[in-house]
Image (cartoon, rainbow, N blue to C red; front, side):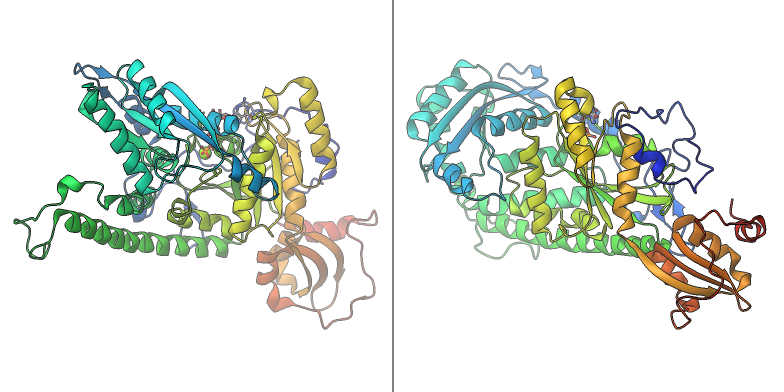
Length: 562
Ligand SMILES: Nc1nc2c(ncn2[C@@H]2O[C@H](COP(=O)(O)OP(=O)(O)OP(=O)(O)O)[C@@H](O)[C@H]2O)c(=O)[nH]1
Ligand SMILES: [Mg+2]
């Protein structure tokens, strides 16, 4: 296919078999015309241009991917002999709450992840956080123990396992623990250690829950100033309730203190609490500022009139890989969870994409089941991008055995965000990893379902169909116009032809009469030439898509088109 022919119809793509391989962008210059080589792109408010090289001041401290990878490599752990070890080891504790399982079975919208599915996910999260699992304990409980979450016998079992594992002082729970539970657990583990006269590195056993683990990953992956502010806010929100009595050893009257910092007779705990509170307020202000910038950029983005697509999906589904493939943008894509925390927008020109030759594509943070609400809140700014999107591209990793549940989990978050009414394109990704039979089945499924396409962001398989399906979804965004354009506005007519579907064109004395379906941005611009008061059926209509075109008309039309 050729990019120069922007008037090529959808039929080309619809007729292609789903397994058609498109040339890799690296091999074929034609695939991607105008893409970012690297770096973030931003709109210039004044001249509506997209500038890939400048970055606004709110992302002044960007860590690049290499930095993040290096920092992860450097996560050293000092063991009891003072030896630096690459990984921190931990015991993973999983609980299946049977009553919750029963409850969720009557609720179709919230998918239920089984103990094993949830544990598999935790293993990935732990690996991503840079830890190694030294042992696992699981328990099926009718009701969770309000004090220690798991039963006392299990606490004992986890403790034994930890001792047997050697240098290991971290216990990770596949659950959201209340501050009280976390403290009780830490107490009981540490007490046992003291009794047994067994000291592990640092002498302290750490109890980490799912939220803390995800926050740790977020903290490692935050790249921009905005991302870091959001993570810090989430961390403080997480720590605030855990300051209560958690560090009782800090509860003493404090004499010294900076002016205006400490009141008389204030205890250390009170000071800590106040500092955290103050920091939260400061962070919120800073995030507000950043959001203002973002809103401005969004507005300028809107003024360009380019349609805005947002990639959404479960963590590790392949969102960044897809964006990379389409733009060669070099957005961090890795087999780690939550690789992307900062929304990145690229302008993408897709071949054969007629009605919207250029689109903006934004990569967003991945979703995960059981994401604690305050974590979601902290990333609201990021998710704003999703709210602004014209079309959502839902990337699904069909090689994951739990993909159907993951899809439901994402849909339920989209619903919570009130964005489930937008057109959604389902992208069944990682087709290359499937057994041939499964792949065939899913390809059939995609071909027969609406707005669904099966692809591999790795091999490029199916990406041609992706363009067609996205364009289909975008056609829902076209609006009808009826205009009478002065002949001096030939350029505008060309745009209508290029980006819209023209139904009728008639050359009249006062100008060109035209009825068409066009993107909203184009419709808005042409509002001054609205001709809806003029007769709907003017004489001498010429069917543009018919075979009765003659050369003279086309010459007039095509002036300056290519
Ligand atoms: N085999 C195969 N691997 C893929 C495909 N798409 C993505 N991957 C791999 O899957 C892993 C995750 O991909 P990402 O693009 O980082 O996923 P993401 O959805 O952006 O993940 P988060 O940013 O963590 O939410 C990477 O190791 C990719 O190389 C595919 O089509 N086939
Ligand atoms: Mg990503």
